[in-house]
Amino acid sequence: MESDDRRNRLFDELAVVGKAFGSPKRLELVELLAQGERTVEALARAAGMGMSTVSAHLQVLKLANLVRTRREGTKVFYRLAGDDVAQLYAAMRSVARERSADVSQALEVYLDLPGSGEVGLVTRAELEQMLAAGEVTLLDVRPSEEYLAGHIPGARSAPLDTLGAEVDTLRETPAVVAYCRGSFCVMAHDAVRILGGAGVEARRLEDGMLEWRTAGLPVAAGAA
Amino acid sequence: MESDDRRNRLFDELAVVGKAFGSPKRLELVELLAQGERTVEALARAAGMGMSTVSAHLQVLKLANLVRTRREGTKVFYRLAGDDVAQLYAAMRSVARERSADVSQALEVYLDLPGSGEVGLVTRAELEQMLAAGEVTLLDVRPSEEYLAGHIPGARSAPLDTLGAEVDTLRETPAVVAYCRGSFCVMAHDAVRILGGAGVEARRLEDGMLEWRTAGLPVAAGAA
DNA sequence: TCAGTCCTCCAAAGATCTTTGGAAGACTAT
DNA sequence: ATAGTCTTCCAAAGATCTTTGGAGGACTGA
Image (cartoon, rainbow over all chains, first blue to last red; front, side, top):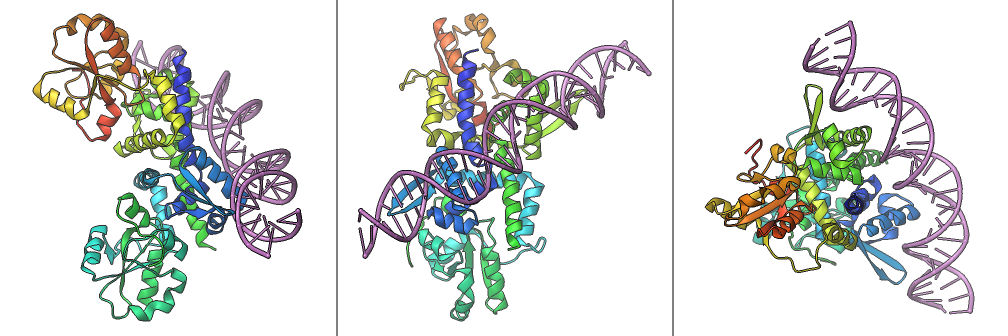
């Protein structure tokens, strides 16, 4: 048949998008890009890959039209092409988590969860209420780079590695909530642990920036 | 770092799902499976691939936990593991379509659209209303195999290749609406064309079974 | 213009995928 | 049992991806 050709071409094009999501390294880059735009070099550093490798992967993503670029001087900034891309990534994660015992197990090992009962979770709705009432100190514990590229309005940047120094400013606040990249990210877990160890009772947002963004909620950029 | 290992394992597992969607042939199988369960042999026939090839691809999908199997005598029926899988596939399609000029162009060529203005479209909401009022003849123009595996309640099976013989029964009906697999499927386009040529004015549901199913609407199975 | 920075492109080696035909396995019916 | 049907497994060839180091482009600042 002649229409077979055309149908094949259609699925070929579709598979370009699928393939783009089919490499662990690229998924890691997408996860980073979901936090905000970054230069090639920053991505390479954050993901621990060589520049050539990162560049090659970014070309694949670009070919699939999942990312866009912006040049500034000698640097090239990459960002996701749209919220729908972040949504697709989030959807894939949730299917993987739902469907695959391996994924949820790898996730548990990665997040180092103490089995089942986890206390101190705050839902997105609860957080919005607390923010509106002004009765929460919201900590963005991602690297400051990512905070600058976009954060939850009202959050204060408190990167994990300098968190210890800020403990004293948190003793008198009514409620401390930490968040990071998203439900696959350990930083907020670690932050709560660190703060707890220093005697500050903190809770954790149930997910993170990725989910906030894909929910279409407002995002602030730049310094506080 | 030691946590790098764990993170890598997580993304490796995630990529298994991505990879599963990264081959045109597998996407074609997913598209077919979104219509309902099928045997390996039926899939091979419908997609024009060898049995070994289909079986191999199905193993990949199974490894990613995107499909499930059911045995009946010597036959093995494959089906999508859940509605979330169909939703993910639909989301991927829509991102691809939105983001990539190549995809929408391949789609236009495939669907043989006359450019822009297309008349005679019925939305899902309109169809539901018409069905409730009983003032529509709804034709499922997919192969009868797929109709049996699941169709819109109230639809009548009218496969494309036998549609010509049924034209006479359609002359007096108030409204004729045709649907097929989904927005990437030509059969309903063809049906409307065939009917129009025979003097029966028919319209087309804007999408198809895939979208109906992922919208969580009821599905009927078996003969009318 | 020249040196320096950041990024992309190139080529090649190595790894992984895809496709095939045929053997082997699971099951049914006789 | 035995033959027959449907499916999976296997091995090998060919195709495609990934990773690298280094060359080459784009841009800046002196």
